[in-house]
Image (cartoon, rainbow, N blue to C red; front, top):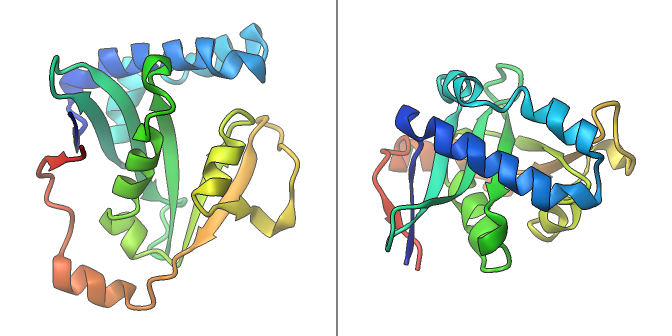
Length: 181
């Protein structure tokens, strides 16, 4: 059994370790060790705490042992009220292939930042490109090459025609835990 809950500042060190483990094991097939280690410099615990002040961050926790095994965030796209972006989506390599990445995306896509947005962007790693495409994200402006950061820019247009009404009806995400399985 797994559950999604809001990220807490006390999770920061464990989440930073999870991200480092995932990048070093999963992303190494697409990126050099030097690239990964440089990227990890901006994904330390203190960076995650600062980002959590601007974004809605979630973790997936194993209900049996309370181990954090996944993470993902959503926030405004450069301060926009009508566009949002997904950030820092990682699943522990030991738990990949069990639908947890999908659950993170599904959770982020019920967040108020997603619901209010007409367009959602994600800077996708080479490693995760096909996963995000399966989740309905396409190349931004049809550009199917990595940018200067070695990332693909993907986007999805919100198909919820009643986005504002959904927020009015359901309100903001209230931070309650959500059983997944």
